[in-house]
Length: 155
Image 1 (spheres, rainbow, N blue to C red):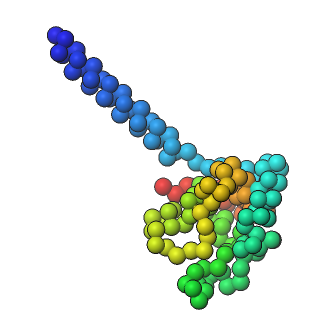
Image 2 (cartoon, one colour):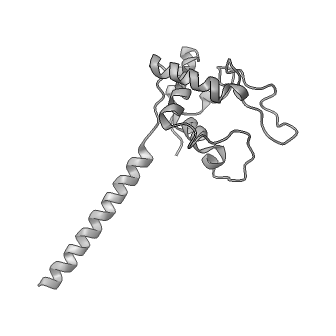
């Protein structure tokens, strides 16, 4: 009888551990970044960070570099604009966050993808990345912000 209880207890403990792992994993992967373009404090912080960390490549007015759709002599794409003329708003907030934090090669699963865009993990906190992206989004016209709000995060 005690052997049956031991086996049942171990099975129950294993099931509990599996469920806890699954809940933790699901919670982490289900966490979606929300940009806060309507929060003036977050936007102001993001504008300051953008000026020091992003403007050198993406432009003080979010205009990007010339010919941003064509690879340069090194085979790299110039920095795109983040204003309404660019493609930033075509990506959901979660994907944008992961590009900034982890880098495009990590996001697309190709560590050899050549890009001049650095990953900012360890440079900016998650909240600072959200602030920068919130600032960028705050500059878009209302119809583009609404279109961006309708984006579904990538898996």
